[in-house]
Amino acid sequence: MRVEFSPPDITEEEIEAVAAVLRSGWITTGERVAELEAALTAYTGAAGTVCLSSGTAALEMALRLLGIGPGDEVITTAYTYSATAAAICHVGARPVLCDLPAEGYLLTAEMIEPLLTTRTRAVIPVDFAGICCDYRAIKTLLWQKYRMFTPQNPVQEAIGRVAIIADAAHSLGACRDGVMSGALADFTCLSFHAVKNLTTAEGGAICWRNIAGADHSWIERQIRLLSLHGQTRTAREKLAGGWEYDIVMPGYKCNMTDCAAALGLVQLRRYPELLARRRAICRQYDTLLDGLSLELPGHILSGQNASACHLYPVYLPGCTEVRRGVLMEALSGSGVMANVHYKPLPMLTAYRALGYSPDSFPNAYRRYAGELTLPLHSRMNEAEVAYTVMQFTDIATQMGLLPPRHRPRPGPPSFLEGEEDDD
Image (cartoon, rainbow, N blue to C red):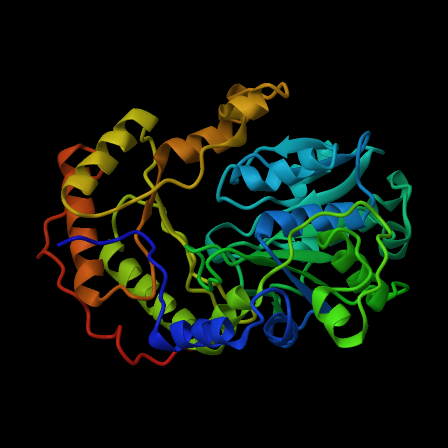
């Protein structure tokens, strides 16, 4: 058996939707993009949404809208994919990397506090694996420290404190304290890359919350100008009402196409069933791995919290980077395509060149060395989950990473199909 890590879940409905756009004669930014933006705004509860070419572009547009640049600092976690910090570098600001807490993967207010300075302009928490950070606690901290903050542009002034930009590449459909991802932070950046829960092949979006004192139509207009060369009229607008236009800033080129949006619209319509499937798979993993000397991700939340179940990371306490590599190679040989999330930024050449050392981030390095991400996607079936667990536990036990467990080898439970989701 071969268990893929994270293939996209594409049906004939998505294929036909994209084909219809291709047949229409209008394939770049147009009506489908506008429809997806409106649908995402309604789904997340955000004040507005602009779709872009990637989640990375969304992060950069948020920073540029806030006027963040050289001389400014932006705090983010050392335990993330490079795109989070790269966007900070793109605008000329300094990424200030934060170690993980002793437990877990999420940036916390306690870890952020000692890094705040009068140059801090934004914090970018990362919703790892599909679970939202505690934005309420982070916001409380930043309000407590508002006297350290001097706004540099009208949006910063309207927010009144250091801005919060959520890297929500993993968390579409999740919520914290009853608020959906997309409306938790001042700005939220989504990714629709091919491996994400909802895909447009490549793509992303920036959402923003209701900010008292901010002109939301102005925010939307500025993002559109930034993302399309600073051009005052789109191609669609010029077609409808004359060719004349102006360039009001030397903007960028990161707009979404109607082809991508057509795919995304079908995916968003299907999203409740895709999320329910992922949550059922996580329950099966939790059941089969229960009682082992592992730290599981804790996706099955209750009350006003829910996870998007994007990744299923398991943490083996005491594991080393080398032994984890041997385990992954053996899993691959058995047909199970596992992965690692993430190599901490200070281990990468680009961020070592900025003066960061892995030794300064012991919690992030320890977490990385013992982390292994098991396959999780909405096309997985019960047998594939059970086979993954069997291979993982057998190999890890043989390597001495898990203690022997004398019980019958687990068969797939029967609750995956048709289970009512109660999150």
